[in-house]
Length: 403
Image (cartoon, rainbow, N blue to C red; front, side):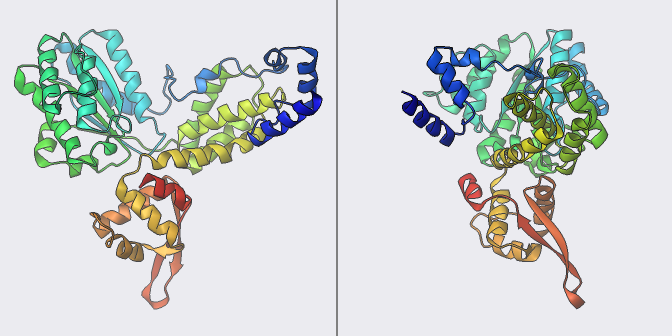
């Protein structure tokens, strides 16, 4: 029996759970003690780790007063029975775009029954039909996922709108994923046309990392959208420290977080473009590492141990939100280390479906570098001046999966 448990312990080690079947745990198992009750930590450091989850919406959003005020201005007409102003939120990953709009819309729904919001991430809802089905069901129609033509679904949305007692506000997060096809633009046109059918219409919120996204929309859609643009700048180290301090007070037992840990986490996230998500997730991961070690304190060493896995997971996850052109550029750079932008453009322009002009390509490269997918360094070209050479920080295999 002991031999069997030792073999099982080795199997567990290959699965990444080596600490679960320690010799002490094996002895507890043999004595008949329940393994999970035996796993209760002596030095639990969490009060409630849910305050570090990505879906948590705090009551206070440090450093985002101006952006919140802009959103309130856009939605305030609803309280007077008028149509809201459509909004476009842009800025890099982890700067508070999604959490701010969810916070403001929650406040709006608490203040009035004239508006209800529907949040859709276009990485999941990435077609005209999928979004119209979600909207129709939100408005009270029971629409199956299959069996109806898209125009029939749209007709059902219009019929539901006639009976609707509130103004729907549709939030399309990661909207780039929707606009890669013509049907995505048609969807925006559908939503904007609702007002032509005797209703106030639908409030639209678009969220994207690409600040120029709306400028590339069809001119008719751009004119009807008439959006208010709210640009989110990266969090500063001080703002990140404030965010982490407030979250840690809610999530951890008082006094267990090392006094330097918050500053280290904030500095690390600031280097990655002011990404608060990475800072918060690193704190959560470090806390779990500390509890696994039964240390009783969250130390800087635990935090540094969390950075590598959190950063890698964040970049890999981020690939799923990149447009095809961005993935093509990453593929080219991963295949050609230390390549300059002119050479990148030469190889990119040979790819099927390449649509970026050279000036726009340079802007995309700058955005990818800001998100830490690539890095660059200046290089002298002698009499020809200077250029920048680019390197990719993502394995080519992961990039090809995205394509």
